[in-house]
Each structure stands twice: as structure tokens, then as C-alpha cells.
Image (cartoon, rainbow, N blue to C red; front, side, top):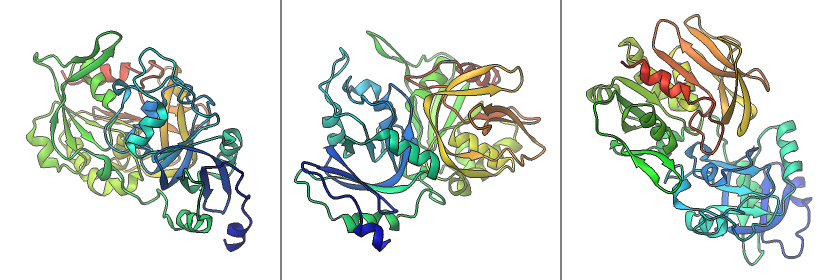
Length: 388
């Protein structure tokens, strides 16, 4: 890689930010948000709204998000639209410089918010070209850096990108999971009222295992009629059973499902053996698949955005879904006890499974998406109704 390091594009005047790929490619731009450098996998997201939700989704841990929509940051930020308070994406790449916010709900600027969260932004990048590169060559490892004085050690950044091992084999769920058991009290948001409170009437009790969960999942479980207790990712089977769940939810999360499965799969297998209803989303869906004997694979570019069509095989209905995943359950060799229930209409990859003879199912997409399509809320209702 020495030749790549010595042949990178010269730094333009005024450039204060840079994205350095592991192959030596250097993309110059304008840095904003936090100063410094961070390493991760570069992916792209096609959603037109929800950049704050994306940046606070723990499933993006270890990743730099390229937004294909050019105007990111123009509605500002607020504390109500956070998906979690743990680390999500390490940084983001955008086309246009962030303008002053124009939205009545805004309480601050995107750049200042990134600074407060220690996340790096890079503007002025040809995001269309970068996205095409990812589509053709796969998601690269890279370093995103911001230096207000414009001084960068490019060879050192290239080496850092090359030395990073990548997401395969990396268990990030334990990094982003909460550390204590929490009785979830929140409910869904409404304009002018904010977030509601979870009712204290007698409800089916769902224990949610947090592999890096989005808070809106728990709100939707409450909306569907559940009482929710959230537990850390590494909670043993005995700890889950001690809470006397009517059903167990497996959350989304980052990293390689096979790595997280080392401690998650035995717990899920124990739940299935006891015929406890299980519902998984995203990483949780992949954990359920592994527990049933399926395999997971690293995708070429992944699926990330708010407009992904998914076919429900039972009746042919097409759901428009929100997605964020770089791994998938391998549907070319599913075990006999696993039924495929949903597939992507983009590439035919698996988007849903059910375990035969069990009240256990999962989907690869996000039925709780906020903002995003609402086609799939029925899955929460299906799960809660099955607990009665």
C-alpha cells in the first residue's frame, strides 16, 4: 500500500476534513462536529429524513455513515429524536455544507450536536461517487478525520485504516448494551405532548434483551400492549427466566452476529426449549436464526435506508420497510425447522423467519422505524397477541 499512500490526491486549499480508505484513497472535504479521527466501516444510508435517529442507532457502532440525501442537518436536532444514549455511528459523510436549521422542533445545530457527542462530520464529498464505489466494491474500512487547522498525517491515517480488523468477527453488542436491568416506562411520541408513559395495568410481560436496542422498539412494544423489562446483552438464561417473562424480545444491534452468538445463542436455545414466545429484530433476528441452526453471512454492501421493499411470502403483500444491516441470515441453506417468511425484493436476501412448532419469529428490518414506513407495526401486535 506504499504506492497508494504516496499517490493520494493533494490537499485542496481550505480542506479541514478527510476520509481515508484502507486502499489509500483520500477524499478531502470540510470537517464539522468533533475534531480528531475515528476508524470504522463506511456504509451508506438512503433515507431522506431521520439523520439524528440514524446517528444514535447503536446498530451503526463501528461505522461511518454516508448519507445519499444531499441536505443533512437542515432541520437541526432535538433531544426527543435520540434513539439511544450510547455510541452509534462514529461519524458521517454528507454532500452539502450544513446550513442553519429550519424547523420549529429544533433546539440546536447538527454540527454542535455532533461536537457534544464526539462524532465527526465531513461535508463537501461526492456522496454519489462514494456510494457507487461501495455498491461495486463493498463497504471499505476507513478513517474519518477533522482538523480545524487542516493538518493531517495521511500515511498514518492510511495505516490506521489498514490495521483496523473490520466488523467480521467483532462483537459490539456487549459494548453498546445497557449494563443494568431497566423497567421501561416510556411510550410513543405525539406532537405537542412528547413521549407518553407506560400504563401500569396488568399486561403481558416482555423481557427485552438489549444487544444495542433502539428505544422506539420498546415504545412500540408498550403501544402494542406489553409491559417491558430490558436486560443487558449478556444476561444468562437463568436471569431472563427469573423475571418470569410471558415472551422475550431480541433487539437490534451492531457487529458480527456469529460473534455475539457465542453467548446469546445458548440463551435463545433455552427459551425455545421451554416454548417461550420469541420475537427478534435485525441482530435479534439473526440470533434467532443461529439458535435454530441457520448461518449468517456478511453482505457485500448491506441494506440501509427507509424505502426497502420486502415481500411477505404467506400472502404476497409487499411491505415498505426501514433497514440497517450488513449481515444476513443465509437463506440458501436454512434448516428444516426454519421457515422463510419474508424476502428482500432488491436482492432476494432473507428478511424474515419463523421457527416451526414454536411461537418464535424474526424480521431483518425495523418495524419500529421512526421516522420511517409504518407498514410493519402489525408484527408487534402479532407478538403481544401470541402471549395471551
